[in-house]
Length: 332
Image (cartoon, rainbow, N blue to C red; front, side):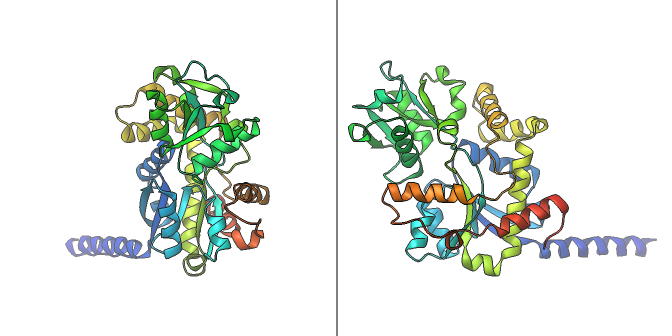
């Protein structure tokens, strides 16, 4: 009996070692932000990447340029939740990278102000608006929103403040007249205290703008396709989980782990936003219309000379394979 028990333990040990050896290491670099930090913690707590035989190393990076550099150099396998507008001009200049899927489809930002004379977007003419650096994601979104509603952006002073969290703090402090913050804060704006600027909800007004996507290098697609597909499948599982009303408890547990000092109203506000807008790409792929919209904006901002052919900038076959794996448990 003792020999049999020892043999069984040895067999289980060999199986565990074999499973560990079969796991694919994957390094993921994603943007920072309240939603992304919560999603990363939810991923970790639920072991979603591990469920697809992956050994993840997930990095949170505030600077999109660093993510681009990591993807191009190969030190990062892919990004699954970050802005990818900068990928198109990089491709135009010879970078061998591809957009391979969607993340957060809707911009999770809104414009706020603490100034009593700023009620509408038009009121921002002659005012100072906090953004990121020229060409950064939050800058592009803010300018696009203002232009949509006929604001003369030449009359707006744009101040480079940093991330959306930095901008929102500057708005609340009154050091800028308006700026972007987490769209979920619309529900709790008075607690900060700021107010929502009319037509400032980018999830409604800029719904064609793909906020975050998944992208990688051609080299990784050629050499590590299986791991990339499994990674996309894990994120598809995350998006389906978080948009399911039954996942509220696990979502709140992840949110409280990341923001232990935040009021319950902030947790509830983000949950309400996700359930109302369903912003995540549960089917992973991005449409040609979404990809071309992003390129057209780049051309308008003069960071890209022309709209590039879709086959040069994107490969949605990995997303299709990931959905098959997620839905049927088979990989082709």
